[in-house]
Length: 465
Image (cartoon, rainbow, N blue to C red; front, side, top):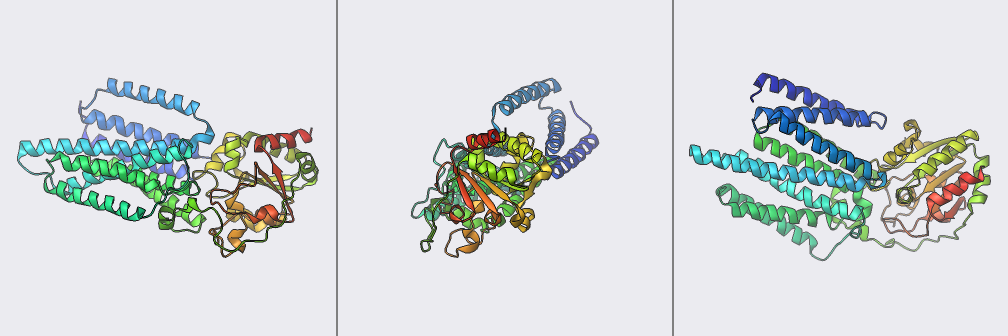
């Protein structure tokens, strides 16, 4: 079955518009779900029209594929907990890269068959785009799988750095370039391609291996960009304009988000990728006079909260681990009924992926307009009666402002210490991902509520009964 080219181009334009509109809607938590649906409709339309036009499959088989894919997606989305979203996003990136690798490989096979029948060699542009789709796709696949393993704690999340690591990685990249040159000279020789595929898979592992848990939001964003670039390269390889558009949108948005994440940590991308920051265990500077920790029970904390007129809640990865978002929402409702203003302060890199805290709080039906960004909350932090820090560490560390010798000095943080009273909910005095001490815990206005965050919040809620 052939579809008129004019109709195809019209559908492609409509799909591209849907992608752009969907991406725009994804910029706000209030419209993100609608944006995801709009983009999905655009992609479904494009896939059906493309397959139908190329006479690859009948519409009956396309319908079967859609049904199977929808079933798998529905089952996975129902079973995956919101706390596991970071690793799910990593898997999505990985399979996107793998798909691009296969598309590039298939495009090469088609191009070689046409070249043999026509006697005209495959042009260099096609070879370059095919090779790029395979290289970037393979790197994205294995890099994302390793990120998944670290995020899900199936493997250690620490940065793995060894002497000469950059030399090894540079050697692998150089070998890839050599394979590319030999492949361009003799594209019919599969050996160079197989070697390039193997090296690209290895490069993905070596790329993510030295990156620690503290930098995972940046890695997720960057791998997302890579998956888009691989898709765009695959689009050039098969001559599909819409795939180029879709891949470019994903690649560009991923790069922009990566830049935002790096800015939020006041670090360059090269520093994130090559510093092995997750291996830092203690501050490199002189020992800071800390003082004494002042623990408090939930029952005593109740009296402070009961009298508070304004409360800011600052969530971190510890909230995700304890799955305490629903307890947070319950406490918010009680405080509001008691006449207090309650808002949330969200740091861009809190958690394990961009928007991690927003996703968790959305699951608990926290109103979007209560989620304030760091730049919105810091100017008024000193006006809050109580700041409740739930499982956050590095993103509220005042050493980023006060201690020039600190590894995170200069990193923008939420100024929780400027609130009149600070409650820190933690299991222990363990450091965060950055592996450095937090002077906030020893401030005069700080009280530590030790224990599981969900249980502690539950105790606070019961105190109001």
